Length: 177
Image (cartoon, rainbow, N blue to C red; front, side, top):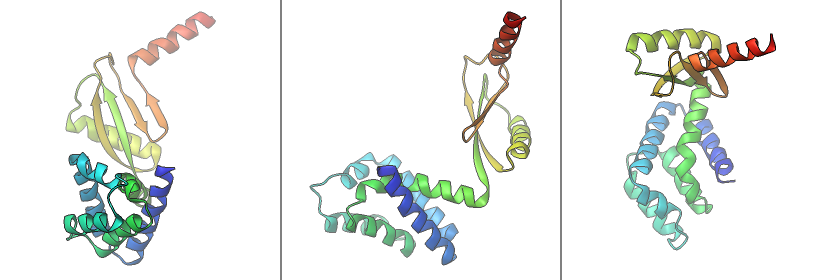
């Protein structure tokens, strides 16, 4: 339920920012909000504390985020007024997802046995960007259990070219024969 509500507020914020041509400023503010919430879990627990009044929460937000675009700040204040302060924690994630969808950007998680070089990541980005039809932001995850090859996850789609997977397929084929 919490994610669903935060998603609706993120959509409203996104639509307003787009309509008022302040998408870049809203993005910067929402990313800052996410970083602050991640770096200070105390703030997240304050937002989720029912013993703190809405007026006190609004004061904390106004004081903490004075430089924010008015659309972003007002969205946070409306969430507090509507007793949805706890959902502010997941708002950045939903907003960034909407922004990426709007820009046709996706995140590719590339799992490999070792840290890939910038050149290798660029090749992965180009190859899988063409396959997915999206501009990719690539994140390299090192997993020592991967003997060789790559596993690339883009959204709900996984391209598995690891040696383990190839050996498993070969084993199945041999057992069928």
